[in-house]
Amino acid sequence: MGMSVEQLKELAVSSPAKIVLLVMDGLGGLPAPETGKTELETARTPNLDRLAESSTLGLTEPVSPGITPGSGPAHLALFGYDPLRFDIGRGVLEALGIDFDLQPEDLAARGNFCTMDEKGLIVDRRAGRLPTSKAAELCRRLDGLSIDGVRIIVQPVQEHRFAVVFRGEPLDDRLSETDPQREGVPPRTVVALAPQAERGAIVANSFIAQAKETLADSSPANMVMLRGFSRLPHLPSLGELYGLRAGAIATYPMYRGLAKLVGMTVLATGATLANELATLEEQYPLYDFFYLHVKKTDTTGEDGDFLGKVGAIEEVDGLLPRLLNLKPEVLVVTGDHSTPALLKGHSWHPVPFLLSSPWCRPDGIPQFSERACARGSLGRFSALQAMPLALANALKLTKYGA
Image (tube, rainbow, N blue to C red; front, side, top):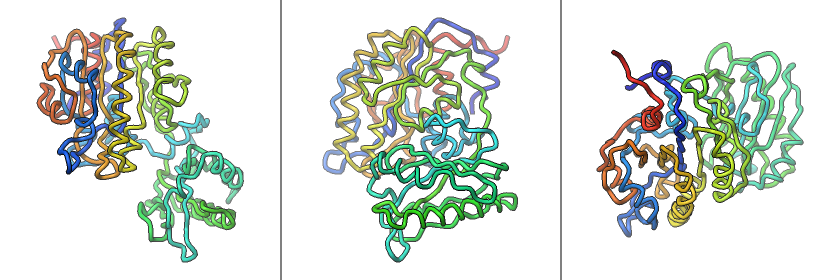
């Protein structure tokens, strides 16, 4: 299975080399029936293809074969943390991502505004992807409730998403979610998954009932759904483990939250990919590890927008020369998971992976795609190995054993 973070820590040495981890969220795809080509194969990517020829290629398994990962576990694996060992709830990620000062005793949940019809059935799980400004207004109406001595803090995240923090006497996080993940059915009730979580279930259900009442006159968002109940875990930081000064460049709150959790400094950036590149250029001297996140490849995949995803990949390719200009000793280009437009959601398919460094063995394959990466010398491997490979190629790992 490879080494644990604790074992790798023993081998870590500092070197001046810089590592850039470019994550195109949801990168892997499936062939369009008309052409037999995936999004990545359809996209015109001269820069990525040129880079692939002098790089080593493979396919990563984000968690394990056949398992469809959420964004949290998939990213943790890329950062070198076993997602089956370090389980981080979506609520915690959502709260950290909006720079909320989460306390160890807080219970956090991710919320969705949704639309319910007069029969109490969900007709739109995302309330028409409510504009963030409208969601912020609704959050203000729900914020500050107090139930059984527990203060409830409600903060907008993005579009229909918000974070809820239950603050007071610590509540157990073993609670079921209320999002049935489909339309045409009623929201579920929060159920305690352990006897110690009973009080949390009562408080959460009571909050949902009050929210329903408060939002009764609101359209399209007239109900809330909660998922990802969680409390703050402790993870050793990338600095503690490998001596890395790590900077994160991501625009979406959840990924900023994830980066913060593993001890990265979250850098300010504008909303576009060009802004993200400008941040990388400005901050380049200050860090030796950069995580650069591209969200558009995932959102277009989830929307089933095949050509939109092709365009998002081409946009990254067009900006790649600016990144290569910085001459990082190690550049990894990959995704956290696959989001095929054909499936309109995350999938279990392995993810294209490229590693470029002066010390890699080039595969000489002049294309970056699922099929090209399947022929690469790295083969099919666990995403957990991405970090050791990057560290080794930056000469940041010493010999194991005598």
